Each structure stands twice: as C-alpha cells, then as structure tokens.
Length: 339
Image (cartoon, rainbow, N blue to C red):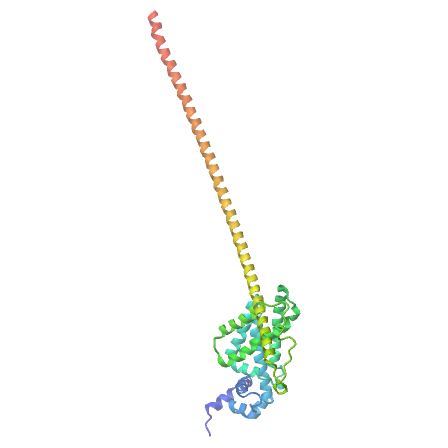
C-alpha cells in the first residue's frame, strides 16, 4: 500500500470554505503579477496544487475568482476612505482620506495593482474609475459644504471632487512603485497642495489672455512657424499676465495677513479688557476690605474709648467716695472734743 504524503493529508483536511479562500488568494497573487488576461485556470490550479475541475467547481473559471478579488479590494479601499471622511473638520477629512489610500497601497499592494488595471467585465463591480467616482461622490459632499461657507458656487463641488480624488489616485499609483517618501509625508504634501489650493480659490477663475481661445494643431498640420516677433510679443504678454497673477496673489496674502493681524489685535484688546476688569475687580475687593478694616479699627477705638471713659468714671466715683469718707473721719473728733 502506497504511503499517504503529508501534503495529501493536508489537502484532504481542507474544507470547502478553506479551499475557496485558498483559490482566491492564489488568484489574487497571479492577477496582481500578470493581470486577468495573462492568468490562466491552469496556472491557478497548479499554484493551488489542485486540478482544474476543482477551480471550475468553486468558481466556474478564473472569472469567478477575479470578480471576488475585485469586489473585496474595492470594498476594503472604500471602507477605509469612508472611515476617513467621517472626521469633523474638512482638512482632517482630506488628510485622513489621503492617508487611507496610501495605507491601502502599502498594506495591499497586490490588490491596488489589480484595481488600477482596467477591470474585466466579469468583475461585476465595475472598474477602478467607478470606485474613484464613488469616493469622489463622498468628497463632493464635503466640498459642497465648504463652498457654501466660503461663498463659492456649490454646483462646482463635483468637478473639484474629481480633481482632488484623481490627483490623489495618480499620486498613489506613482508611490506604489517608488515608496519614497513615507506615506505620512506624501499625504502631508497632497493635503498641502489641495487644501492650500482650496483656501486660496479665486471665486471667478479665468485663463490668461495669452491662453484664452488658443487652439493647438498637431505638428504634422503646422504649415509655417509663427514669426519670432509675434512669439516674443506673446511671451511678453504672458509674462505680464503672470506678474499680474503674482501681484494679485500678493495682495490676497497681504489682505489675509492684515485680517489675521486685526483678529490678533482684537484678541489682545479683548484680553487687555479682561485683565483691566479683573484688576479693577481686585482693586474694588481690596478697597472694600480696607474700608471694612478701617471700620473695624474705628469700632475698636470707640469701644476702647468707652471702656476708658467708664473706668475714669469709676475712678472718679471711687475718689469721691474716699473723699467723703475722709471728710466724715475729720468731723467725728471735733464733735467729741466739744462734749
């Protein structure tokens, strides 16, 4: 009788749920490395050390495994971003959302590699673009509220949400390969660009005069080069436009700095008033205490004066009594001599 190998016993002990999970993990690794089209059922079966019928029995083919992998990865990433967007402050939401995407990329690199490829029709859950659209819809709500508070048109929030999410997603794809700097630093730079850009939005943005109406032609259709003089004028015009933009930005920064300075001065004045009130209150308390002490001293002095006066009266009475006694003593011998 042929001995049963350890691997055979291990495969026999694997339950249907365990086998299904094994095939999902094997497929996930192959899809991340070779893509959907580059992966075959034979490879999945060979990597899992099972026969092809086992794969068909559980999933009906590689399409079934791919659909489960895509659905899991999309749900995981969407869950992380949704949790991040539950913060209270808008900037914190952006920070945590960027960090959530980078965390997912770092902890689930294979899953992200699968998602950024065009999802196969068999996935049943759409493409990475649809996932980005779902995330953008959540960011849209955040931006709409911020736009209302800052006086911008909230109808523009969907477009800005696509910009922000798209920027973050493309940065994530780049960081997937380079992995430098660390994810917290990448997230900080993403938020630096997006948040500072949002806080300095122009309510009515417009292209510069040198760009408005420009229609470029493919190189093959270009007949003649523009004269150097025209090119020089355009460059000069563009330079002036850029200077105007910089001047406008400087004015905005100066206004913002002035506003911050005024707010600081108001806060200082308010603090000084509070201190003056507190000092005045303390002085009143001290004055009240001083008056009470003076009253107590006056009352004590009056009591002492009364006590002194009482003692003086008693002494005067005693002296008067003694004098009367003496007077009586003198009168008695004279009367005796007369007898």
